[in-house]
Length: 148
Image (cartoon, rainbow, N blue to C red; front, side, top):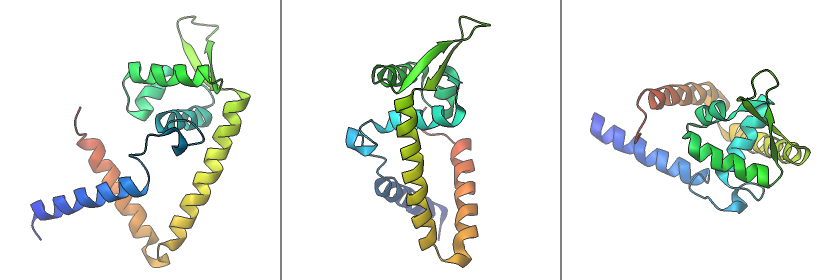
């Protein structure tokens, strides 16, 4: 196969993967009654425990203004809270509320179960190959970010 044909096949496979994972679905039904952007933000805040808006935006590869709107919606929904750093009052961290923690834990549990089932369907002798290929793909995408 030539590179052009292979790269087009990669594009089509990625499009199908996005659809299968529901990435294009931005409805609130997509993730525990919140949008996918809010879901991703909630998971990252939950994993970090405390995180700044800038760090969160960088992790999610979003502009600060977009991240700020997403966090505002989560604050208004009482899923996250903003705290002022006692050493530097200009520095604000974001953390989960009790309600946010419950949703975060539910997301983690259901996603771990979902991907465990997916992983189990991969033939045992191909699992390492799939993981290595995904790592290579992520690195290639990181080095050649589109549309920015």
